[in-house]
Image: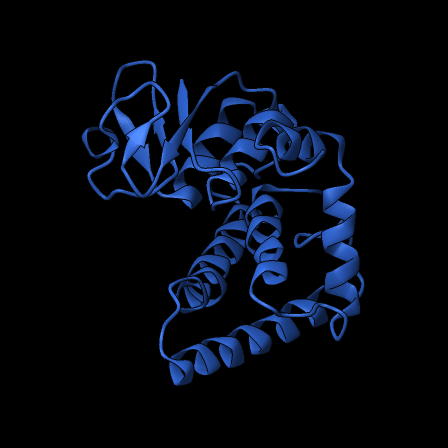
Length: 201
C-alpha cells in the first residue's frame, strides 16, 4: 500500500495510525501547490480531489478521506486496539469523534490557513475555541478520547490540535487538552511519525 501525504497536513493522522498499528505502507510526499508527487506523478490522477491523504491499496484502487483511511488501516490489525470491532457501540463512539473532529474542528481551520477576511477568521477562531472547550471538558478524567486506550480518533485529534500553534491559538486555557496533546506527542510511534515527516528533530 502507498500512503500519499503532505508533511504536517491532515495526512499525518493515517501516517500515525499505520505506524501505531504496524501496517507497512510506502510513504509518498505530495506538493499540494503543484499537485506533483515525490516521484513526479500528477497527483490529480491519484486523487482528483487534489488533497491528501490518499491510500493506494494493493489491488490498485484508491481510498480517500482521512477518517475512512484510519479505520481501514486499523482494521488491518485488529489486535492493535486502535479501533473497536465493527458493529459495537464503541466503534460508533470512535466514528462520532472522527465526525466531530472533521466537521467541527478540522474544517474551521481552513479560513485561518487561507488568509480569509478578518471577520471570517474571527468567526472560525470563535468556533474552534468553543470546540476546544468541549474537548477539554471531555478529557477531564480520560487519558484519551475513548478513555484509557489510544484510538484512530486520537491520531486525528492530535493532528488537528497541532495546528493551533501555527494559527495563534493558545491551548493554555484548556489544561486537559494541552496535557492530552503532550501525552500523544510523547508516544514512541507518534514521535517516529513526526520525525518521518520532518516535524521533529
